[in-house]
Length: 79
Length: 142
Image 1 (cartoon, chains in turn cyan, purple):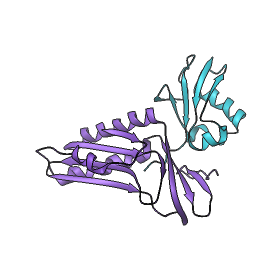
Image 2 (cartoon, rainbow over the protein chains, first blue to last red):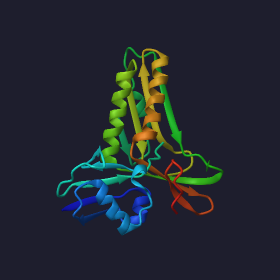
Image 3 (cartoon, rainbow over the protein chains, first blue to last red):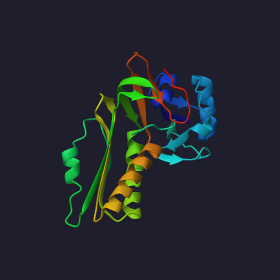
């Protein structure tokens, strides 16, 4: 399947891009994130991150569909 | 109303949105860029947001405040982009019939925005370094 990934803050720095399109056999965010850790060297463990799919918060086992927009959100620091 | 703004926050315009004939109290909070954090001299901040989700989550917080407290209007705007010392990073305003609800709702909004809305702050230090803040003990990534 193909996913559109957006990266923010330190994940953006680590990936070296703000977004990318990836082809993957992963069908949930947990497996997809593990692939990205191997690919980009992300140091966050999943318990430090939140997941959003198509602009809404969801959980790590959410079934992904082709062309979903998937975002792994580092701890926030607004304000 | 919650929004993300790439341009300076127009406080006078936001204050007008708080008006209503039943209002007896208005409480506003301004979060500003200060010149230090954790013992380091800071000379500016950059904010980044996942705008689509930030605006829906921010609006959810505003709606929660309206449900929890006896208020007339609740407004919050958060900046993104590069900010200088003294610039307003976030503005939250609440109008209500009485001051207790206005204070409580304003506090609720800013506390929840800081905890939940997908916005990130990069601090720029006077010594030339900079790093994203991930406020749960994660080391700065430079």
